[in-house]
Length: 77
Image (cartoon, rainbow, N blue to C red; front, side, top):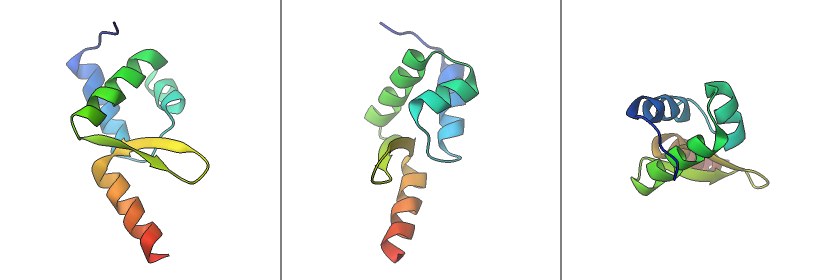
C-alpha cells in the first residue's frame, strides 16, 4: 500500500490545475516517487476532482476544470 500525506495530495492537485501532465513528468517536477503520485492521482480521479485527457496519442492527467476547458477548445476547432 502506498501512503501519502494531505500536503502531498495538495501539491499534486496544485500542479494538476495548471496544465495537463504525464504522471512521470508530474512526479519529476514535484520530486516525489512515481508510485505515490500515481496513487494520489487515482484517488483524485475517484473523488471526481481529476481525470484523464487524451491528446490522441498520449494520455495525460489534470483537474476536471482544466480538462473541460481543453475539450471546449477542441470542439471549437
